[in-house]
Image 1 (cartoon, rainbow, N blue to C red):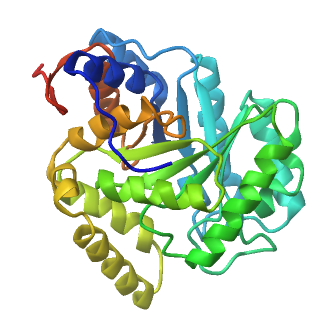
Image 2 (cartoon, rainbow, N blue to C red):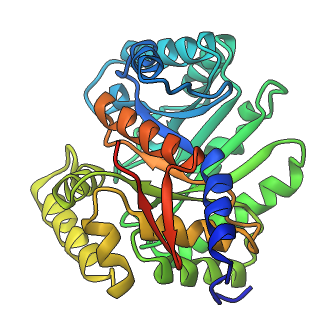
Length: 330
């Protein structure tokens, strides 16, 4: 498929944005009390839809923490299920010692009602056990349990700082083979944050050339430019040696330099409306682009902000001029 931008009439653009936003998903921390978030949203007249998907960052699984601390993610998943939502916990391959270790966590999550997982290689350069990649987790067979309805993998429009392009392409092929062998399971890519629509669509074209058939959910992040770079810094260099921190800072600079004219606005703006509008328009003719994923930076305030913004989008509380999207003030 090419990268020609979809042309829609102004009213059709607005309808497309609403449709696109209705399928949005959100990332939260294992420490975020979603009962409080849901109540505060309700007090503002915003109802979180039933079966809403929230991916859970297992911050308690960072190096140096005890295995028992992962109970926070299990408890958060149980809370989400009780609230009527769908938890999709992050499972970072390089943080698990072996299949038995992984099985303990997976079974505990399934037992509280979890029916989806995000499989990742993880940030550590050196794995604690035998697992190197997300597909190493998938190939254990532990996620073939009939209770598992969704498997998500990561996508990297700017490239993955922890591996090479050739390895990323090879892993993408493995993911597609896995998806073909599991037609009953919903399998897709959640991408890292991108601000340049043209760069994102070029990346999509490259995936197509590499044989990707998996749907893609573009990642977005709200907040000012400082918050966005702090988020990138945390993703790339948290708890790493000094030389890797320096490498992470250079990666941040590369991301900033790579925006191009069409990405600067979304990088700087508190809400990346130009990127959201473009992805919504592209999704009208490109079935690979199926939804939007909000990165929160892990704080409850950011999650609530994302829920409020998405509510405005789904409710049509915005104006469209040409292809430009402007949210109406509260």
